[in-house]
View 1 (cartoon, helix red, strand yellow):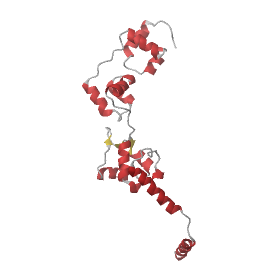
View 2 (cartoon, helix red, strand yellow):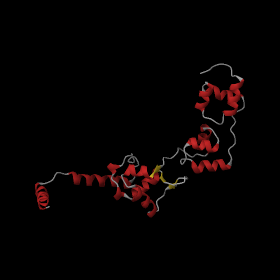
View 3 (cartoon, one colour):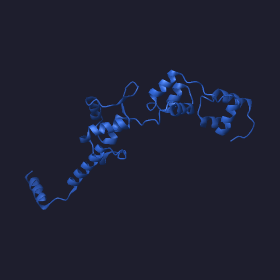
View 4 (cartoon, one colour):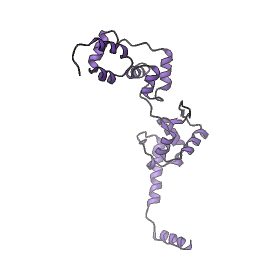
Length: 205
């Protein structure tokens, strides 16, 4: 990293790009650490935030967690740092939610994708429709848990591929215990009588 006097070209580049690209990009392009870049920006009067409009705030609120941060930055024409600070510190939007597509929910639960879609519609379960041409169904973790709760007969606790068990709600604990009991029932050793009955049925065809 440089520790030399700033050139006019570097100052001009910083002036044009300080609010447009990420910190890591600035470090790479200028070959200076971010602390030195921020100090220089303050001396140049660049550190004052560009005022956010009401429309920008509404767009960020509506799409936070639905679109990737890089996409939000591009749509809003703001740096990653500016978008994150606005979301976290000013609008208190919290961390971005994890959204699951129907295919991902199918992979997680082992339930057929079409069955999931039909259940969401018939049971009027909360969900999100992505703003794309296909408008696919998407579920966040809370909506996924709602789907699991309303359709406990379609899945088993030991078949899920993500850890939801730290969310120890009463219904989930009861579901786990029920599945464990069922599993023990079907995994127990066969008696001599059961063996004879099964062999007899096999012989009879």
